[in-house]
Image 1 (cartoon, rainbow, N blue to C red):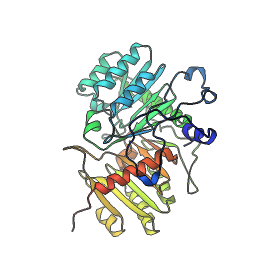
Image 2: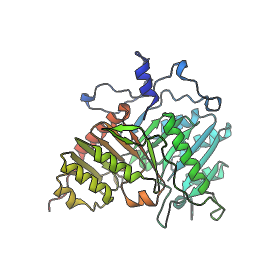
Image 3: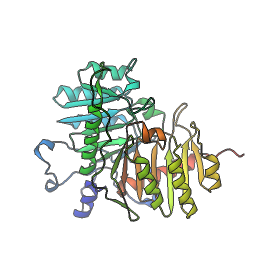
Image 4: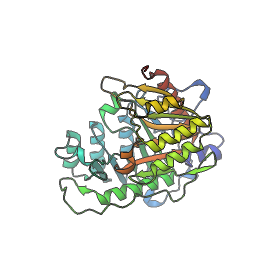
Amino acid sequence: MKTILTVLLLLVPALPAFTAGAAAPQSAALGALPRELPSLPPSLLAPLPERAGYDWAGLPAYIFTETERLAPPLVDAIGRTRRTLDVALYNLQIDDTVAALVRAKERGVKVRVLFDGAHVYPEAGRQIKAIIDSGIETRVMNGRGGTGAMHCKYAVFDGTLLQTGSANWSGFAESFSYENIMFVSDADVVAGYERNFDWMWRQARPAGQPTAPAEKPTPPPSDPTPDVNFNGTLLPDYVFSPRGGTEAAIVRAIDAARAEADVAMFTFTSANIMDALKRAAARGVRVKLMLFAGQKFPFLQEAKANRMELRFKEGRLEKGQMHNKFAVLDGRLLINGSFNWTATAENSNTENTIFTTAPEYVAPYKAEFDKLYRQAFGPKAD
C-alpha cells in the first residue's frame, strides 16, 4: 500500500510537527513513530474537483480501543465530510456517531448507510432506527447462504479517506473489547472500497422493504493492481468476501513469511490457513497465535504438535472480547480488517481485508500484538 504519508516521508525531508494527540503506548525499540497523518503541502493537494474539500490532517492513523476512545475520531471524520459519506456497518450503537451522520445529511452531504439484516429485522436497535427514521438513505443486506452476514465495519469519506478495522461503531467495542480501527488515505485502496460499497449497495434493499428488487449476487470487486511486495510475493492491497479470494491471499502471505507470524484472531476455524501456518512452522517460522478465550479453537492439538506458541485473551471487561482480526508477518506485513479466519467469512459473509507493508501501520500493530500477547494466558495442561 503506497500511502500518502509514505510519499510525504520520501519527498519532504522536514515535515511540520504532527497535530497533538494522545499516542498509544509503543515499544521503546520501535523509536518515535508518526502517530497522526500530517498536513499535506499545497503541491500534493490537487485532487479532482469532485473530490475536493476533505481535510484529514490530525486524524489518527490507527486506534486501539483500550488506550483511546473510538467515537471522537469517527465523529471528527464525519464532521469534516462535505460531499459523500458511505458507511457499511454490521452494528451501530454509538449515539454521537448517529448525531454526526444526521448533521452531515442536514448540511447537504450525500449519506448512504448499509446495515446487516439481522440488526434491522425483525426489530432494529434504537440507534439504527434513528438512522432509518432520519431520512438518510439506508439499505439492508445479508451475506450469502443461510448464515451469511454483512459483516463489514468501514466508512469512506468524500471518496478520499477510508476507516476500517475490527470495531463495530458500538459502545461494547469502545469500552469492553480489544479492537482496532485504522484511517487510510491511499487512493487505490479508497477507490477499491468505494467499488465494494457500490457492489453491496446494488444487492441491498431499502430499509423496511425486505422484498424489494435487488441485483443478483456477483463476485466482489478485486484489486486490479496487486502490488504489495512481501518477500517477493505480490499481494493485493485489499480483498473482499464472499468468495473473493481472501483466504487464498492470506495463505500466500503466510507461505511467504520467513521469520515470524503473529496472529490476533477473534475466531479461527479455517483449515487452509492452519495448514499454511503448519508449513510455516515446519520451515522454522515462529508462529504465535493469540485467540479470544471465549471461542473454541478446533486446531489446539495441531498447534501444540507443530510447536506453535498459543495464548488466549479475554476482553477488557466482563463479557468483553479480544475482537481483533489482524496478523503481522515478519514484522513487515500487516493483514487487517473485518475478516475472521473462518469458512463463513470466506464463503458467506461480506467482509473486507487490507494488506500493507507501510511501517506507520505495521510497527504499531506489531507493538500492540506484543503487548496483548504478554497479558494473555496459555492453554490448560492436558
